[in-house]
Image 1 (cartoon, rainbow, N blue to C red):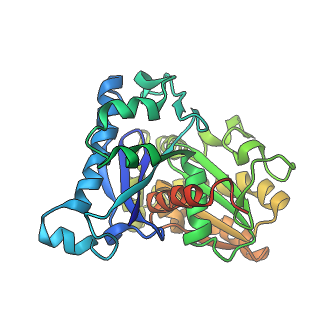
Image 2: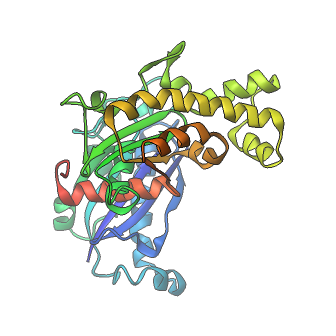
Amino acid sequence: MDAYLMLDVGGTNIKAGILDENGALAGGEIYSFDAKARGSGEEIFRNFAEILCRLRKKCLTKDHAQREHIKENFSGENMWIKGIGMAFPGPFDYEHGISLMKGLNKYDAIYGLSIQEELKKYSGGLWETEEERQQCRFLFLHDVEAFALGECYFGSGKDSERTMFLCMGTGAGSAFAHNKRILKGEDGQVPPMGWIFNTPFKESIIDDYLSIRGLEALSKEHFGHVKSGLELYQLCAEKDKEALLVYKKFGKWLREAMLPFIESFHPDTLVLGGQLSKSFPHFGEELGEECEKRRISIHLTQDTSKRALEGLYTRMVTGNNPG
């Protein structure tokens, strides 16, 4: 049976899964690995290769309990690795699979190198036969685009005609879709590449506000020192006044930043992912009111990485940007 090994590559962790020929996640399980993003080039590529090999071994394991867990997807010995997909943040040359990240404290050591070619040096034990190795396809995709495709085909965007996606975490990642086709701004409907992060906003750009560092800057204003998103979330659960004010101001930023895109694109669905979306109940009131007035449904993704893995699968099996 065909199998697809998919990785959502972050700067701290790599989330990975095995998808079958129907796009189902084997055992419904996503595995998390250390990214080792600050290591040498060899360490980084060895880590990628080891993760891929460990994914395959999970399907071939002799452990009865684990084998029973995934046997509905694969028969083990008959598994054929059809493709390997990797979702990366930018900057990145996705067509050629080359990282262009430099000075970001992650993956500096592999700048300018072909990931597919380098992986071949360390993945000798991955393929069962030379034929399998030669026929295995590689795909590289922007992490937010992968997430958006996963939502379009497996999640909240399945029945949506016009969908906007926003992932808030280390930055503000975005995408736009029309009838499940990711828009890149060629027709002027959306910003170039569908990215809003570098749009001018207040004293800087959106990325500096709708992100963890934006939230931390607000927390410092109110508490005199930085508090993490988790600390703020816990304080809000305790009805802490200052924490609630932090989120209220963050919610005003969110509404103000998103409104121009909502008014120009006219989405019928807005999908929120990323680390900060889990706190939406504390800061989403103003944006929620704007969306309600326009009959826009808001959906919060439960697992951004799962959707990214599904998006990689979608792009790989459908070829070019599906429409």
